[in-house]
Image 1: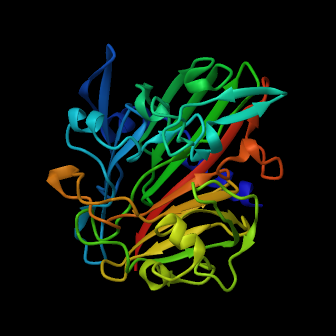
Image 2: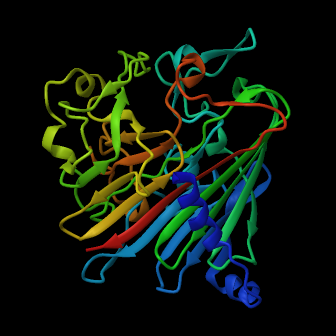
Length: 373
Protein backbone atom coordinates (compact mmCIF):
# COMPACT_ATOMS: atom_id res chain seq x y z
CA UNK A 1 0.00 0.00 0.00
CA UNK A 2 2.84 2.39 0.88
CA UNK A 3 4.55 1.90 -2.49
CA UNK A 4 1.25 2.53 -4.29
CA UNK A 5 0.86 5.87 -2.47
CA UNK A 6 4.38 6.97 -3.40
CA UNK A 7 3.98 5.77 -7.00
CA UNK A 8 0.80 7.79 -7.40
CA UNK A 9 2.54 10.95 -6.11
CA UNK A 10 5.48 10.36 -8.44
CA UNK A 11 3.34 9.71 -11.50
CA UNK A 12 1.37 12.89 -10.79
CA UNK A 13 4.61 14.84 -10.89
CA UNK A 14 5.46 13.47 -14.34
CA UNK A 15 2.15 13.93 -16.12
CA UNK A 16 3.00 15.14 -19.61
CA UNK A 17 1.35 18.19 -21.12
CA UNK A 18 2.18 19.60 -24.57
CA UNK A 19 3.06 23.07 -23.28
CA UNK A 20 5.44 21.91 -20.57
CA UNK A 21 8.62 21.94 -22.64
CA UNK A 22 8.87 25.72 -22.81
CA UNK A 23 7.34 26.21 -19.35
CA UNK A 24 9.87 23.96 -17.62
CA UNK A 25 12.78 25.90 -19.14
CA UNK A 26 11.49 29.00 -17.38
CA UNK A 27 11.09 27.14 -14.08
CA UNK A 28 14.68 25.81 -14.08
CA UNK A 29 17.62 28.22 -14.32
CA UNK A 30 20.97 26.56 -15.03
CA UNK A 31 24.23 28.44 -14.50
CA UNK A 32 27.87 27.48 -14.18
CA UNK A 33 28.89 27.10 -10.53
CA UNK A 34 32.52 26.04 -11.12
CA UNK A 35 34.69 23.30 -12.61
CA UNK A 36 35.99 20.11 -11.04
CA UNK A 37 38.25 17.45 -12.53
CA UNK A 38 37.72 18.95 -15.97
CA UNK A 39 33.93 18.96 -15.76
CA UNK A 40 31.52 21.86 -15.43
CA UNK A 41 29.62 22.13 -12.18
CA UNK A 42 26.18 23.73 -12.35
CA UNK A 43 23.88 25.50 -9.95
CA UNK A 44 20.25 24.87 -10.85
CA UNK A 45 17.45 27.01 -9.45
CA UNK A 46 13.99 25.43 -9.52
CA UNK A 47 10.99 27.73 -8.98
CA UNK A 48 7.43 26.47 -8.55
CA UNK A 49 4.18 28.34 -9.27
CA UNK A 50 4.11 29.79 -5.75
CA UNK A 51 7.52 31.38 -6.37
CA UNK A 52 9.25 29.11 -3.87
CA UNK A 53 12.75 28.01 -4.72
CA UNK A 54 15.16 25.13 -4.29
CA UNK A 55 18.71 25.05 -5.64
CA UNK A 56 20.62 21.96 -6.69
CA UNK A 57 24.12 21.28 -7.90
CA UNK A 58 25.45 18.36 -9.92
CA UNK A 59 28.51 18.21 -7.67
CA UNK A 60 27.35 15.37 -5.44
CA UNK A 61 23.80 15.75 -6.81
CA UNK A 62 23.21 18.01 -3.82
CA UNK A 63 20.35 20.10 -2.49
CA UNK A 64 21.99 23.48 -1.85
CA UNK A 65 19.03 25.69 -0.84
CA UNK A 66 15.35 25.32 0.17
CA UNK A 67 13.40 28.55 0.48
CA UNK A 68 9.78 28.37 1.68
CA UNK A 69 7.53 30.73 3.69
CA UNK A 70 6.61 30.60 7.35
CA UNK A 71 3.06 31.06 8.68
CA UNK A 72 3.35 34.83 8.12
CA UNK A 73 4.63 34.48 4.56
CA UNK A 74 8.26 35.29 5.42
CA UNK A 75 10.63 33.19 3.36
CA UNK A 76 13.91 31.75 4.56
CA UNK A 77 16.39 29.05 3.58
CA UNK A 78 15.98 25.87 5.64
CA UNK A 79 19.00 23.77 4.66
CA UNK A 80 22.79 23.82 4.91
CA UNK A 81 24.80 24.75 1.84
CA UNK A 82 27.36 27.17 0.43
CA UNK A 83 27.33 30.30 -1.73
CA UNK A 84 30.27 29.33 -3.94
CA UNK A 85 31.64 26.14 -5.44
CA UNK A 86 34.99 26.74 -3.74
CA UNK A 87 33.24 26.72 -0.36
CA UNK A 88 31.25 23.62 -1.37
CA UNK A 89 34.41 21.77 -2.37
CA UNK A 90 36.19 22.66 0.87
CA UNK A 91 33.12 22.21 3.07
CA UNK A 92 31.29 19.31 4.68
CA UNK A 93 30.94 16.36 2.31
CA UNK A 94 27.43 15.51 3.43
CA UNK A 95 25.43 18.73 3.22
CA UNK A 96 22.50 18.01 0.90
CA UNK A 97 24.34 15.24 -0.94
CA UNK A 98 23.13 12.17 -2.73
CA UNK A 99 25.05 9.60 -0.72
CA UNK A 100 26.33 6.28 -2.08
CA UNK A 101 27.45 3.74 -2.89
CA UNK A 102 26.52 2.80 0.66
CA UNK A 103 24.90 5.48 2.80
CA UNK A 104 25.49 5.30 6.55
CA UNK A 105 28.12 3.03 8.12
CA UNK A 106 29.76 -0.26 7.23
CA UNK A 107 31.37 -1.85 10.27
CA UNK A 108 35.14 -2.41 10.25
CA UNK A 109 35.15 -1.15 6.66
CA UNK A 110 34.51 -4.55 5.12
CA UNK A 111 31.76 -6.92 4.01
CA UNK A 112 31.51 -10.30 2.29
CA UNK A 113 29.56 -11.23 -0.85
CA UNK A 114 29.48 -14.83 -2.10
CA UNK A 115 32.50 -15.66 0.03
CA UNK A 116 34.60 -12.74 -1.22
CA UNK A 117 35.62 -10.11 1.33
CA UNK A 118 35.64 -6.51 0.13
CA UNK A 119 37.48 -3.75 1.94
CA UNK A 120 36.21 -0.16 1.86
CA UNK A 121 37.88 3.07 3.04
CA UNK A 122 38.18 3.76 6.77
CA UNK A 123 36.84 7.27 7.38
CA UNK A 124 34.76 7.04 10.57
CA UNK A 125 36.59 5.40 13.45
CA UNK A 126 37.17 1.83 12.18
CA UNK A 127 34.23 2.10 9.77
CA UNK A 128 33.30 3.32 6.31
CA UNK A 129 30.84 6.21 6.37
CA UNK A 130 28.67 7.28 3.42
CA UNK A 131 30.57 5.34 0.78
CA UNK A 132 33.99 6.62 1.77
CA UNK A 133 35.71 9.98 1.26
CA UNK A 134 35.43 9.72 -2.56
CA UNK A 135 31.84 8.51 -2.62
CA UNK A 136 28.98 9.82 -4.77
CA UNK A 137 28.82 13.05 -2.74
CA UNK A 138 32.18 14.11 -4.21
CA UNK A 139 31.77 13.47 -7.94
CA UNK A 140 30.33 15.54 -10.78
CA UNK A 141 27.09 14.00 -12.04
CA UNK A 142 25.73 14.43 -15.56
CA UNK A 143 22.85 16.92 -15.67
CA UNK A 144 19.62 17.03 -17.64
CA UNK A 145 16.80 19.53 -17.16
CA UNK A 146 13.64 17.51 -17.85
CA UNK A 147 11.41 19.20 -20.39
CA UNK A 148 8.40 16.87 -20.19
CA UNK A 149 7.67 17.23 -16.48
CA UNK A 150 4.59 18.95 -15.07
CA UNK A 151 6.85 20.60 -12.48
CA UNK A 152 10.47 21.80 -12.56
CA UNK A 153 12.68 18.71 -12.53
CA UNK A 154 16.34 17.80 -12.99
CA UNK A 155 17.91 14.39 -13.61
CA UNK A 156 21.43 13.62 -12.42
CA UNK A 157 23.24 10.47 -13.59
CA UNK A 158 26.57 8.95 -12.64
CA UNK A 159 28.45 5.79 -13.63
CA UNK A 160 30.23 4.43 -10.57
CA UNK A 161 33.10 2.23 -11.82
CA UNK A 162 33.83 -1.29 -10.62
CA UNK A 163 35.74 -1.25 -7.30
CA UNK A 164 35.23 2.48 -6.75
CA UNK A 165 35.94 2.93 -3.01
CA UNK A 166 36.23 -0.87 -2.83
CA UNK A 167 32.68 -1.71 -3.98
CA UNK A 168 32.28 -4.34 -6.72
CA UNK A 169 30.37 -3.77 -9.95
CA UNK A 170 29.86 -0.86 -12.30
CA UNK A 171 26.72 0.88 -11.10
CA UNK A 172 24.61 3.23 -13.19
CA UNK A 173 23.01 5.63 -10.73
CA UNK A 174 20.23 8.14 -11.34
CA UNK A 175 18.35 10.61 -9.17
CA UNK A 176 15.54 12.84 -10.39
CA UNK A 177 14.62 15.86 -8.26
CA UNK A 178 11.13 17.29 -8.83
CA UNK A 179 9.92 20.49 -7.11
CA UNK A 180 6.13 20.52 -7.06
CA UNK A 181 3.63 23.32 -6.56
CA UNK A 182 2.82 21.74 -3.19
CA UNK A 183 6.39 22.45 -2.03
CA UNK A 184 7.42 18.81 -2.31
CA UNK A 185 10.92 17.70 -3.24
CA UNK A 186 10.38 14.32 -4.87
CA UNK A 187 13.59 12.29 -5.15
CA UNK A 188 13.40 9.26 -7.46
CA UNK A 189 16.47 7.03 -7.37
CA UNK A 190 17.36 4.24 -9.80
CA UNK A 191 20.44 1.98 -9.85
CA UNK A 192 21.59 -0.99 -11.93
CA UNK A 193 24.80 -3.02 -11.78
CA UNK A 194 26.82 -5.41 -13.95
CA UNK A 195 28.12 -7.36 -10.95
CA UNK A 196 26.61 -8.35 -7.63
CA UNK A 197 27.10 -5.49 -5.18
CA UNK A 198 25.52 -3.60 -2.28
CA UNK A 199 23.77 -0.25 -2.66
CA UNK A 200 22.17 2.05 -0.12
CA UNK A 201 21.32 5.56 -1.29
CA UNK A 202 19.99 8.58 0.58
CA UNK A 203 19.88 12.35 0.65
CA UNK A 204 21.79 14.01 3.49
CA UNK A 205 20.09 17.40 3.79
CA UNK A 206 20.28 19.24 7.12
CA UNK A 207 17.13 21.10 8.20
CA UNK A 208 16.36 23.96 10.55
CA UNK A 209 12.73 25.05 10.19
CA UNK A 210 13.44 28.38 11.92
CA UNK A 211 15.72 29.15 8.98
CA UNK A 212 19.40 28.24 8.88
CA UNK A 213 21.38 30.31 11.37
CA UNK A 214 18.34 31.11 13.50
CA UNK A 215 18.99 29.09 16.65
CA UNK A 216 18.94 25.35 17.23
CA UNK A 217 16.41 22.57 16.60
CA UNK A 218 15.80 21.55 20.23
CA UNK A 219 12.27 22.99 20.09
CA UNK A 220 11.39 21.18 16.84
CA UNK A 221 8.53 18.73 17.43
CA UNK A 222 9.21 15.36 15.83
CA UNK A 223 6.99 12.39 15.04
CA UNK A 224 8.44 9.19 13.55
CA UNK A 225 6.16 6.28 12.68
CA UNK A 226 8.59 3.64 13.91
CA UNK A 227 7.91 1.07 16.63
CA UNK A 228 11.57 0.05 16.90
CA UNK A 229 15.13 1.21 16.29
CA UNK A 230 18.55 -0.37 15.87
CA UNK A 231 20.81 0.15 18.90
CA UNK A 232 24.52 0.64 18.25
CA UNK A 233 27.81 -0.26 19.88
CA UNK A 234 30.62 2.08 20.95
CA UNK A 235 31.63 2.82 17.34
CA UNK A 236 28.02 3.41 16.16
CA UNK A 237 27.54 0.05 14.41
CA UNK A 238 24.22 -1.79 14.98
CA UNK A 239 24.46 -4.62 17.46
CA UNK A 240 21.83 -6.59 15.52
CA UNK A 241 19.12 -5.96 18.10
CA UNK A 242 15.80 -4.52 16.96
CA UNK A 243 14.73 -2.68 20.11
CA UNK A 244 11.15 -1.48 20.67
CA UNK A 245 10.98 2.28 21.20
CA UNK A 246 8.22 1.97 23.80
CA UNK A 247 9.36 3.30 27.16
CA UNK A 248 12.57 4.82 25.74
CA UNK A 249 13.61 8.35 24.66
CA UNK A 250 13.43 6.98 21.10
CA UNK A 251 9.65 6.76 21.13
CA UNK A 252 8.56 9.40 18.62
CA UNK A 253 5.39 7.55 17.66
CA UNK A 254 3.71 10.50 19.38
CA UNK A 255 5.11 14.05 19.06
CA UNK A 256 8.07 15.11 21.22
CA UNK A 257 10.52 17.97 20.94
CA UNK A 258 14.12 17.05 20.19
CA UNK A 259 15.29 18.72 23.39
CA UNK A 260 12.78 17.03 25.68
CA UNK A 261 14.76 13.81 26.23
CA UNK A 262 18.05 14.23 24.35
CA UNK A 263 20.00 14.75 27.58
CA UNK A 264 18.62 11.71 29.41
CA UNK A 265 20.94 9.14 30.95
CA UNK A 266 20.14 6.47 28.36
CA UNK A 267 22.84 4.26 26.90
CA UNK A 268 22.10 4.98 23.25
CA UNK A 269 21.90 8.75 23.72
CA UNK A 270 25.23 8.68 25.53
CA UNK A 271 26.89 6.60 22.78
CA UNK A 272 25.58 8.84 20.02
CA UNK A 273 25.99 12.14 21.90
CA UNK A 274 22.34 12.57 21.02
CA UNK A 275 20.22 10.96 18.32
CA UNK A 276 22.23 9.38 15.51
CA UNK A 277 20.24 6.22 15.01
CA UNK A 278 18.26 4.25 12.48
CA UNK A 279 14.53 3.96 13.12
CA UNK A 280 12.75 0.84 11.82
CA UNK A 281 9.81 2.36 9.98
CA UNK A 282 6.36 0.85 10.25
CA UNK A 283 5.70 1.88 6.61
CA UNK A 284 1.94 1.72 7.24
CA UNK A 285 0.93 5.35 6.71
CA UNK A 286 1.66 7.82 3.92
CA UNK A 287 3.83 10.08 6.09
CA UNK A 288 6.71 8.38 7.91
CA UNK A 289 8.05 11.37 9.85
CA UNK A 290 6.97 14.92 10.64
CA UNK A 291 8.94 17.87 12.01
CA UNK A 292 7.04 20.94 13.24
CA UNK A 293 8.45 24.30 14.30
CA UNK A 294 5.89 26.02 16.55
CA UNK A 295 7.64 29.39 16.13
CA UNK A 296 7.54 29.64 12.32
CA UNK A 297 4.66 27.24 11.85
CA UNK A 298 6.69 25.36 9.24
CA UNK A 299 6.18 21.63 8.82
CA UNK A 300 8.47 19.09 7.13
CA UNK A 301 6.99 15.69 6.25
CA UNK A 302 9.10 12.75 5.06
CA UNK A 303 7.50 10.09 2.87
CA UNK A 304 9.55 7.08 1.82
CA UNK A 305 9.33 3.47 0.66
CA UNK A 306 12.58 2.64 2.46
CA UNK A 307 12.65 0.48 5.62
CA UNK A 308 14.73 2.84 7.76
CA UNK A 309 15.15 6.49 8.69
CA UNK A 310 18.28 7.86 10.35
CA UNK A 311 17.65 10.73 12.76
CA UNK A 312 20.74 12.83 13.36
CA UNK A 313 20.59 15.90 15.59
CA UNK A 314 23.77 17.81 14.69
CA UNK A 315 25.70 16.26 17.55
CA UNK A 316 29.11 17.07 16.08
CA UNK A 317 28.40 20.56 14.80
CA UNK A 318 30.63 22.84 16.85
CA UNK A 319 30.53 26.31 15.31
CA UNK A 320 33.68 25.87 13.23
CA UNK A 321 31.80 25.57 9.94
CA UNK A 322 29.96 28.31 8.07
CA UNK A 323 27.52 28.26 5.16
CA UNK A 324 25.35 30.61 3.14
CA UNK A 325 26.00 34.25 4.06
CA UNK A 326 28.62 33.25 6.61
CA UNK A 327 26.04 31.75 8.95
CA UNK A 328 27.65 29.58 11.61
CA UNK A 329 26.66 25.95 12.10
CA UNK A 330 26.52 25.66 15.89
CA UNK A 331 25.83 22.60 18.02
CA UNK A 332 22.40 21.16 17.18
CA UNK A 333 21.82 23.86 14.56
CA UNK A 334 20.01 21.35 12.32
CA UNK A 335 18.74 17.80 12.08
CA UNK A 336 18.80 15.16 9.36
CA UNK A 337 16.20 12.55 8.42
CA UNK A 338 17.98 10.16 6.06
CA UNK A 339 15.79 7.52 4.46
CA UNK A 340 17.43 4.24 3.50
CA UNK A 341 18.36 0.79 4.70
CA UNK A 342 19.81 0.04 8.10
CA UNK A 343 23.48 0.79 8.82
CA UNK A 344 25.90 -2.11 8.24
CA UNK A 345 23.22 -4.23 6.55
CA UNK A 346 25.76 -6.14 4.41
CA UNK A 347 27.13 -7.60 7.67
CA UNK A 348 23.70 -8.38 9.15
CA UNK A 349 21.87 -11.09 7.17
CA UNK A 350 18.76 -10.60 9.32
CA UNK A 351 18.41 -6.97 8.18
CA UNK A 352 16.58 -6.13 4.93
CA UNK A 353 19.01 -6.85 2.12
CA UNK A 354 20.94 -4.16 0.25
CA UNK A 355 22.28 -6.59 -2.35
CA UNK A 356 21.75 -5.54 -5.97
CA UNK A 357 22.14 -8.22 -8.65
CA UNK A 358 22.80 -7.82 -12.37
CA UNK A 359 19.52 -7.66 -14.26
CA UNK A 360 17.68 -6.12 -11.30
CA UNK A 361 16.87 -2.44 -10.88
CA UNK A 362 16.83 -0.62 -7.56
CA UNK A 363 14.04 1.96 -7.57
CA UNK A 364 13.19 4.01 -4.52
CA UNK A 365 11.44 7.30 -3.78
CA UNK A 366 11.66 9.74 -0.88
CA UNK A 367 9.72 12.99 -0.61
CA UNK A 368 10.33 16.07 1.53
CA UNK A 369 7.07 18.01 1.81
CA UNK A 370 6.94 21.51 3.31
CA UNK A 371 3.83 23.30 4.61
CA UNK A 372 2.69 25.61 7.45
CA UNK A 373 0.03 25.74 10.10
